[in-house]
Image (cartoon, rainbow, N blue to C red):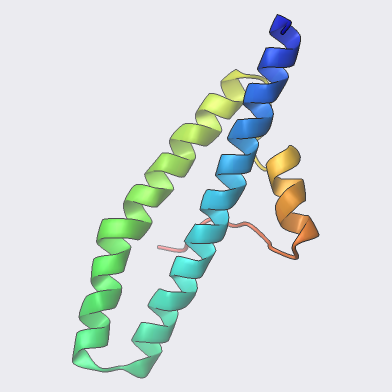
Length: 97
């Protein structure tokens, strides 16, 4: 495999992982919002746990992967991974704090 093909494969793989993690992040945001809307004491605790133990570390990993993707010359979210998500009707976005 040539260096260019290898680099392209790495960029595509990174983009796919980044797009997947953005979809997971969106699902997590929906779950946290639903728990907070229910307004029960335990739901707020679970929402807080999800934010601190899942959302924040997930966001950090996405940022690291996006940085790595840029080092390979790909703009995160514009390559194959995002296109795959768009075909499924999934929009990717960053979490609100």
